[in-house]
Image 1: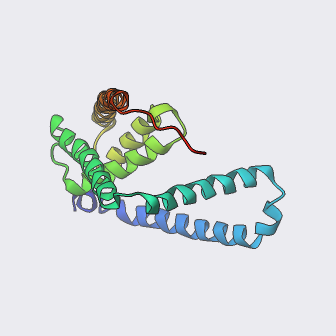
Image 2: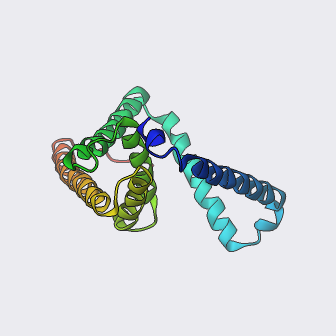
Image 3: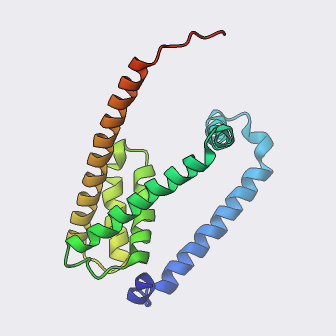
Length: 184
């Protein structure tokens, strides 16, 4: 519980901010529900609705996967690797070497928001949010930004290398098997 121990004076402020977000979010959802019939005429609202329906359809497609157990195990393994990459890099810097497992999870979550931001590859947003998160757990800005840069770069390089290998293997595998003609 390093995160709580290091920030016991900031903790009530963070809890209050979380409560405000939950209350405002709940009020917003209630208002959206009450005004749902009027929102069908607004093009932007239709785009948002279509987006969320697409997410729902994508999550529903998991039920159609033949090897669901393998899918869940691979997903868990990928996130475990991301977590370990986030946590192990703490030991690269003297300023972050005291951080623990909970801090690693916190930075993983904050970094996930940075990667989900609508920018190419999370560049900038990831660095900003991870630096901000590191500040919350008591790390100064220069080592925090250095940490964010190293983690982002190493994750990007690993995705490019493994993705390239996978693409090559997919190409070679498709070349060996004959292509079946569709009966549609």
